Length: 263
Image (cartoon, rainbow, N blue to C red):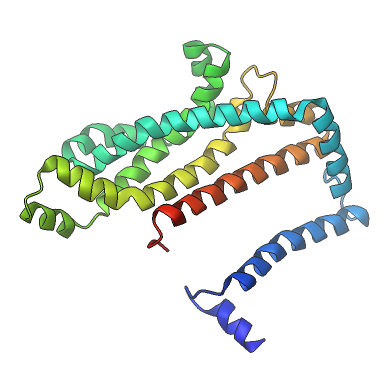
């Protein structure tokens, strides 16, 4: 017991995979047990907090009514909006972090816009791209693009200047400094930035599916809210959380495979 306490209380020390996964499992089971206890003993009103059994039964009904259609549509919207933000935002962030002229031109504007709530752009996206898929993808794009730019620029700036000086001394030109020092040196942190922003992209899904949607996980949650179907709302929230967790694990696995020296 004392050895386990020393492992748990040690700062930045490896605790071993068995203990790690035991704690991770406990982190899920304890809230689930508390939820089960509160809803099955009458402590919580089932109108506001449905029981796990009611949520499970609602998920089964949803499954029979077209769950997969809602799931794939939402994944499509999130992935397209996120990938567009990455394709444009990462190169722009690298430029801002590498060149003072690009920083002076782009960063103040980017910092100004990134504090604007993405939901405020809903009327504008309808005017710009209509009420089809474009407006939903645009909301997710706006929600993560400006964050990706600023986080990428900050990561590039953390490349030690001594690395650039050493490469220049060895004869590297500007293109080689960008591709071999800045780009390669930033890649492990960039993957972490994409992992964080993928999570944010999913949080903007419900907001995006406010725009004249007829399907999708966010649309199902909003529809359930109108009829006070809290069990369906919980089912939708748990599904989005589970998908986000799978994406998170995928990014962490990819980072371990590509950059095993990063801890």
